[in-house]
Length: 328
Image (cartoon, rainbow, N blue to C red; front, side, top):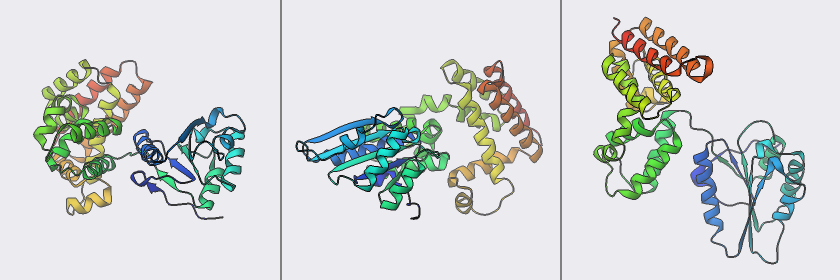
């Protein structure tokens, strides 16, 4: 059996007789697919077909990708390969053995074991797999934003990147849209003032600002920001997640020596995140941090359905964190 193919970064996606977009990050899936589609559209008379592997009728793939007298190029996009039917799996395995070199078949596989036999066959044949795995860490999302700015030839001040991440960094789709807007609507170096002009109100009302005030022990400010965020439609779930993320970052750097750059690599955090976590820890001790993290875990369960009042749960979390920040 051939070794598993190394995943190719989404921004290097290009046409091939068979291409797998592997992962569940919607933004990266869209961007990788767009690059392939754009490249295919350079050919005249492109014929595009979309198939759903979960609701597939036998023969559809072989028909869609077959050589044609009327089209010099065929593009077939197949969704839900991770939930594919037996008929699709049978036809896809057959197709991989004898592809149409004038066709591009894009298979979107979100993960899991279903379709693994097909992926193994694709790896063995040497066709590419594109990396569209979910970006779970804030550091990965920041790297994504930085790469997007770089690709557009734009320079971003460190403070501007920090402000952008505070405003939109919790959700890749929102971050991607924000980056695109800044690239399209502004010129020159992107400064913190520019980010504030576009997203300043968002920054002030996000869970990250609530979390900042809470871990600093600023109870009145934290509760005011929390109530404003709730009043403007922010769900309790991301608010709790933002506070929990900050507490986890503090716990990760607690007691560690070395430079922020060195720790950033070891902990998979951005250097500025290490610096910020260290500053936050100045008004905390081990016991207080442990209590706050336990309360964050309880609040997370409550806002995700285990509690009757999600708003009360997040308010209690903020109050608890503020109180623990003042424990010495």
